[in-house]
Image (tube, rainbow, N blue to C red; front, side, top):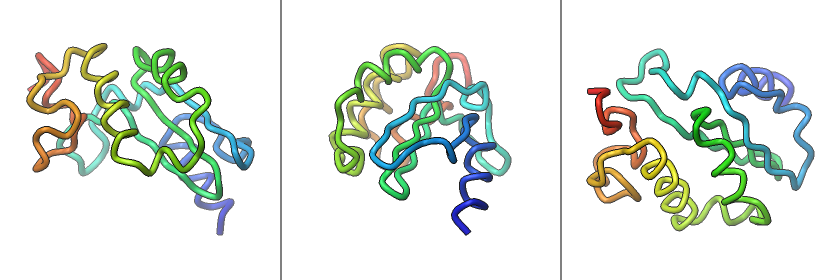
Length: 122
C-alpha cells in the first residue's frame, strides 16, 4: 500500500517520494504548483505532506530555494504546527505577491495560499 501512495504522490508532487528517507524533509520545485489541479478552483503554490516520518514539500518553482532555507533544521513535528503553515504562507505571499488578505491564514474560509489570491490570476 505504501508503494502505491508514494507512486501517486510522486507524480502529484513532482519528485520521487519513495527515495525520501525517514526523518528527511525534501523540497521539490514543480511546475504543477503553477496551475490548477483537476477539480480544484485554485492554484496551490505549496503542497506539503508528512507521512511515515518524512516530509515532502512541493513548491512553485520560484519558492523552492526560499522554502528550503526556511525549513532547514525543522523537526518533522514542526510541520504539523500552525506556525509552520503561517511561515510557509508568508514566504509564498512575499515571493509570489499574494494579496495580503490571504496571507498567513487571515481569511480562514480559503486556503491561506490559494492561487486565486495571486495578483493577476483571478
